[in-house]
Image (cartoon, rainbow over all chains, first blue to last red; front, side, top):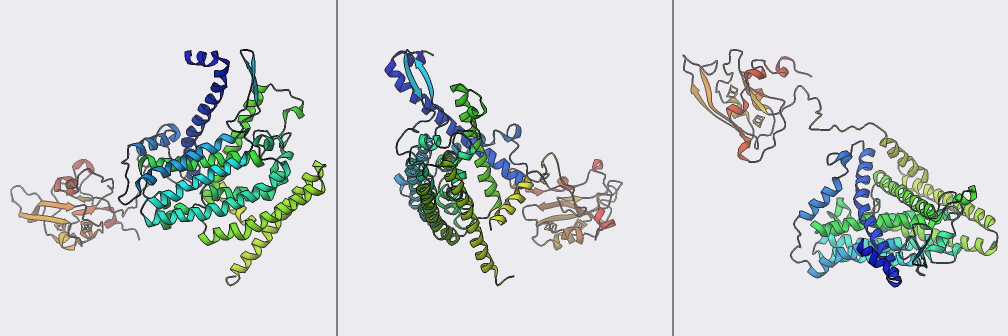
Length: 398
Length: 155
Ligand code: SF4
Ligand code: SF4
């Protein structure tokens, strides 16, 4: 209490305190979300496979991931002979730190006005949501995260790790392309990189969400996100069946736990980013103002956290569901998907979007309708092409 | 193609609500087949005499030579088994045993049979060498009943 009194005593210190408190909260939420997500995933995959999932440690297995974490901490921290030691030690940090950084751009609710000692402060519910590069920061941070995986694979002095690292390089370059192409449509509509502008453009109701205006962009962004976060069916860097455990084969103890945490933080962040870009961010499906309900700023902020959190959980459910459903892609299939399907489709989507924005600049309703029809038409076209390809591939069988 | 994806995902989604097929093992155990081959049991007759006559046919039949036994003449005043001889030492090395059940088939006296016991984890390798006392049927386990599979072999 003394500390808080002191921090609030000086008006200039308040400017320091507010971000520090936000950092603390976001850090705790992010780190705390990892065991919850892991348990959720193990339970759900268990249910899908008609097993109970972890259920021994604590009621409903709640403490399972904590116990696993303690077990990892107590394991021997082994550095293989022949590994490049400094890089071997650096690599998990390079994976973990960008994963933590990238979540800072997410705004969790509308800003709050408070007055401390007669000075009005506007507190945004995000750490770096005001930065002008906005969404580009996410791409930058995740791209640095790739170095962690590549360097881990290279420095381990193990051929399987190296193969995993090389795969992840090629995969992430390819999927970052699809990710960016899926995003460009949104950027054309909003005209800004700034996260707050992107979120505000989707306020009002679900018909304003970018997923309605950019169905194809959303689909591409979602699939590319699976590639970007190394999740099944795109987890080739660690493909167990052919590479041992891929890039982290040689890692043990806490260093392995860092990769593990980075993976789940990346999923968390990616879910938050795709919610923010395409699913209205912290806005609910219907703006309470439209229903004639006045909410004060605290309730609005609480609803922001609720809606964004709910969207993140729903997307994580999707991640796990897809993991439990589809097998891992072959390497060439994955490359084909990115370069031969998403790249041309992304270009088509950008041209259609740009055309519609250019021809109907001031009629939002017409724009939304045209964009929705164009997006659905693209998805139907993609489906038709895929069906034709499938028929061709199965031609000699049936 | 997208319809195929949706179909696959629908199947996995439906499985979430299906009943669990795994059982909570230490508390719940699955029923065993009557011909389950678990840990060996050395049987006795109703009067308490051992069935094993020390003929060593089981040891001869055992492919990995997991059985070791030493036979002795019975003392007619205080017989240990129903035959002329009995096995004084009878050991089975469970880490060598391949659970083939040949010993059970070879035994002319139905003395050695494979029981239902399968929870055999232990802390030392030595503990896996079973002696006669580890395998002999005791009265409370109802000795004297010939194994079910010999009377009533399910085919
Ligand atoms: S089950 Fe087979 S391996 Fe085991 S003791 Fe009997 S004969 Fe030998
Ligand atoms: S167990 Fe059966 S086969 Fe083995 S020595 Fe005894 S009587 Fe002979």
